Length: 306
Image 1 (cartoon, one colour):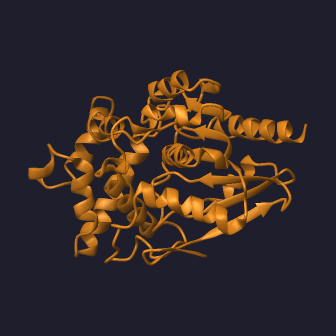
Image 2: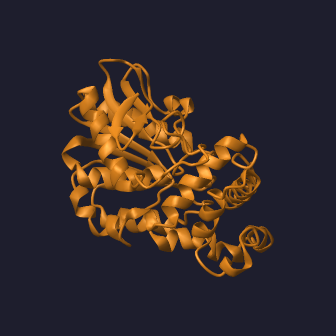
Image 3: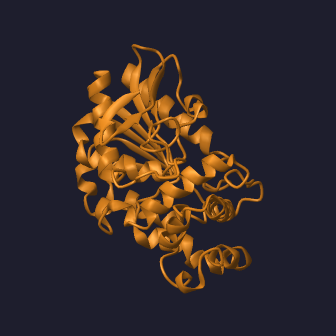
């Protein structure tokens, strides 16, 4: 555990080769917590891999499952500072940064703040935290999944259904009544499972998860989305020149309806030297995504050894 201030303590772990190429993995959500499955994306003989749970998620404390949790000290800027504090704590000079989904937004924010500390970037299911994209998920996607979206919209009070649905759900997720919190968490997770992919093999994961996980996940993601991910609109794309010269592989699934390919394309076009890998059989996760990520991390490890 690493104390990072504001009463927060982060769970972290290191696996692989102690003398290997340093890498840090930034999980998605926001709020999903780290997963041991991420280790499979990195050759343990070549990498010293750092996993950690972002504030209020996973095994970090305080947990967002706490009925009176305070998320005010959980912002993108706090998380960027946490990543840097962990790097310093571990004595790592530079590391490869991997991010998936929300982890991509966080990876870009961290790399733009500390470009001298990033050796490479591997970014899968590309996002940038813009309200345009979160509005697409919470409102515009109703044109793709009208029945499911209507159920999602009706999960908040009638007076709030034409406003910011993330903010409306966030209020329900902090309601004093545990039944109200649980129902809102399940409704949010059902909608997340719906829009994750158009791929025929897509299967639910969040809506069948433990109710405590659903609550923590939904609380954190709605906290971020209702605050515009604590970033000015277009911030990461406008500041992409800070990453010029850092090797990067962007991996995105063509079936990713929750994160349209246009976001990855715009980032790639503005980022000389970046490589965009489009997977024609994959959505937001699964399919050929793990193999494409592993190919990128293997390549960067090999290039360092040459």
